[in-house]
Amino acid sequence: MANMTKGTAAETAGPQDAAPDNFQAALSHAAGAVDTALERLIPAAEGLHGRVAEAMRYALFAGGKRLRPFLVLQSAGLFGVDPARAIRAAAAIEALHTYSLVHDDLPCMDDDDLRRGRPTTHRAFDEATAVLAGDALLTVAFEILSDEATHPSAEVRCRLVRELAQAGGSNGMIGGQMIDMQAASSDFGVDEIILLQRLKTGALFEFCCVAGPILAEAGAEDEARLRSYARDIGLIFQITDDLLDVTSTAEKTGKAVGKDQDQGKATLVSLLGLEEARQKAETLADRAVETVAPYGPAAAQLQALARFLLTRES
Image 1 (spheres, helix red, strand yellow):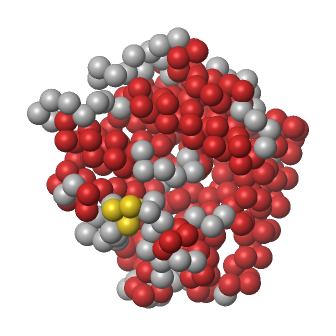
Image 2 (cartoon, rainbow, N blue to C red):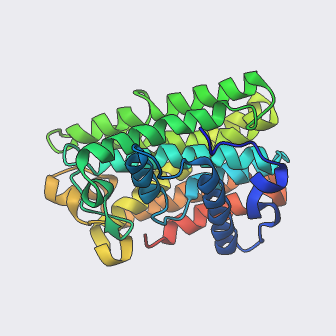
């Protein structure tokens, strides 16, 4: 694609090179860095087919905390990965994640009208354009990862592609969405809900966290440790998402609330109750903090993220 120029490290790394120590500021800094990269990597809305690029950009630049790119950048930072390479992996995961949101909002899925405080992509454009925009965001993620600008080693690039394909595929995010579509008509217990959430949400978090050691060509022990951290973080994220669905408002979350209860879907909140679900999230956060403790001060933001998720409001 025309926009996918390699550029120098200074052009591609973005502002995350001097990320601040404060967690909220670091999160915002990472979001700015990945937005800069996406602006360069995603095609411009021009030509007869420009409408699909316009829809891609509408979905991508709708705001959001960019937690997944943040995880990529932080995991890469543990090993001193070239920021120019890390930001490309971060951009790839955000493109794939955004595709999943566009498709998840479609009438044939969750049928949502609101995402990040504004009309969903199929409402702002139309269903067919939203499907194509989602497809294009999915495929551009792999185009980014497979480019030699992401890493000079073809083996490393192939590993990234394979890991993201597995995380986003039928044994990952898509498999979780399939289980979720059956949730309203099924008598799911805690084990089934944890599996659903580990696949639908946690699988992409796993990719984000192992992207760092893969880019660094680190060992299996590092990958296993960060994969364990990611699984806990993913479950915390989903528990707090379910808590917000019960206790918050559309104005705060930027999306519809109360849908799981209306559809009769079981969640850990409905099965365990509010207090026990909160306690489980806190226990997982404690474990996540301990898991990355061996990395010392370099893991401070990963530890802060675990605490942040417990109190997020959107």
